[in-house]
Length: 239
Image (cartoon, rainbow, N blue to C red; front, side, top):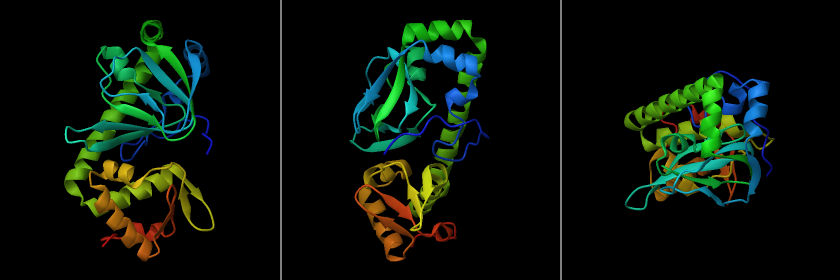
């Protein structure tokens, strides 16, 4: 699977996984060129750890191609999927600006190409580029709003409803239409789906089996196809 170039600017919303305008798309052409020129390009193989929770913060990454998952681990070992980051996104900026250790682990879901900018260079650039700083602040605000909505959804919906909403959101933001249905282009395991909806892998496996039995989804080891998204939108979507 190959990564897509960073997405063009569009409407900013706060109601979905990875549903916001990526950082590069918020900047004008000159600022994008100047920012990318500050760093060096690196490639990360599939499933490699790009940033690790708890480690010191000495650089930020600007994703050019490929998708990554952002996760955090609880004391009991449970891993929560916090976000997906893709082309045009910036990663690690909060820890770099605060000087605190990384708050989450970032893992490549596919081959990833990114520009890496060291912390000192990045912060110095922000001081002389106020419009870029404002766009970074706007991005942080949008991510906080999305996190607030995510917490509200956890409180208001059942696990089955959260899984239905997640699958619909993935279809909208990462879906590719085929004759069989909507193929989710980002490879997520059952454990990763469970980490996104705050459930156990076993619970998600049971719900996916129910969806398969009803012909709503088709799953394999590393792929998921939503054959009947219309049924996911109905009340009581997963029994």
